Image 1 (cartoon, rainbow, N blue to C red):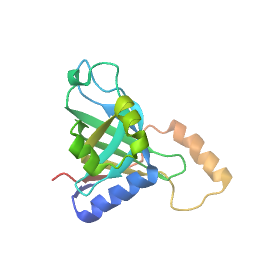
Image 2 (image 1 turned 180 degrees about the vertical axis):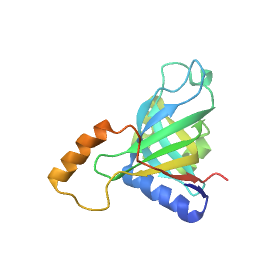
Image 3 (image 1 turned 180 degrees about the horizontal axis):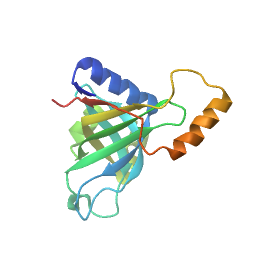
Image 4 (image 1 turned 120 degrees about the vertical axis):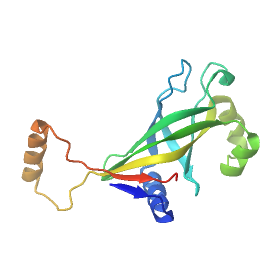
Length: 167
């Protein structure tokens, strides 16, 4: 179901992203040089709907990469009971003032981070939220039967809640 953006929905997304913590980062650009797919750990989700995280700095000169690109983040943690797929627009953050105002890095690790990592922010444009646990507790036998029968089903019964926080 598509929902209009509200503070309550952004708070819900912030909470779920914090709860899950890490995601698969996909740069969806058609560019030849682009940041590689990688596992990222969320630093923060701000009140403007930006997800902040570090990625490994590529060997190529960073100036050769696009500064703005389409992104997908797949948030999933085993046992969490949900997963979240975020689509949005990503930026490589190079402005030192912006870096220090949004992300606090201890002085002793600042140089290592600047040499090996780059800061990326992603504006959440759409978020698909999926519940993976059933509401009722099942016996191990019922769970096994459901798992086996799920292998033979052709339709996906998971229906997401869809959020559009960037209005």
